[in-house]
Image (cartoon, rainbow over all chains, first blue to last red):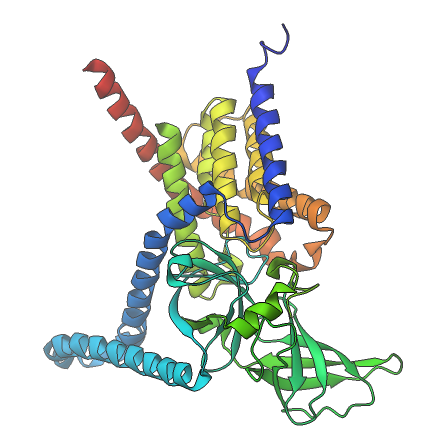
Length: 291
Length: 169
């Protein structure tokens, strides 16, 4: 039989079929994780965590040592004598920096008046097409899909997938992200969409009649039940008012520096927020629903 | 055994890619390191095994991607298939020669990914197709790949020697 003579054809057909089953099931339920995905998360979590720690160590050494090579050459003798002390100082500085960041995060956590879980960023998007992060806390820590993620600077995004010990966060700067927001002073509402750039988002559906000032603070409106009301998102950078149309477009600079995110807080949903979010579409289709 | 070892190497490369490259601030260099074992398998192994490895690693890369799961798996499958057919007539003996093939295969992967992404999501990410993706990433991958191929060969040899030992026992 011809099909017995072509086992490769069956392998290809089987893999393509499985591929389309994966795509189809993910489209239907974006938050669900298969056994394979759970396994990949579980295996790579310690790797990612270790590599992240190693990178931070190397970066600190680079910043503290290599940048000073020129000075050190001029002060060879002195440098040798103080090297040990300097190494200790670097460790102390790193500890102090960590302490300050954690303290600031704890202060913010206390001020939020919402149950939160502190988490470390351990990875970034693998494809380069999207703006997502991997954090080191997951379902075992109470983290579920749709939960908002914040820092003391402002809103970061929301959890789009949660494995046992890690979770994936969709950032507000991703093209698939859309957040219901309002301008703090004028209370004008709009939808903040990511454009894939770490330093800029686009505020849409702001009526032309409304006056928008550059520098005005943009905060979450609380509509949709995904994000709590009043979280800082960014500041108005530029206002685009075309000669026609019902709305004006506003450039918003996010408050969070997405290139240097190390620790975040995941807001565990209270009952009120969960009731609201049940009515939403899944966060994967955020552009259409998760606001 | 070889398949599992190369898969493990791919996961390690994927972890490296999602931690170091992003944090270094060189998003232009964020090339698909995990694609090197896929290309290596397609150029050195029989087709069936190479396809399974490519599918698994592509799916693993999907896990860390914000896109629809499965697109990367199918794109990697297509890339492995392409690499397998291209190897005919090519003299691929050294790590350098094998590694250099990762550059063009990176382009092929991006083409598959874009096409499937458009078919599934209905969105063309062509606006993100900046010069870094077309030129810089394949070039960087082609330069770094020979080192990774050396690693792949070592990992593969590890599996073979253990297997051979067990057989002799």
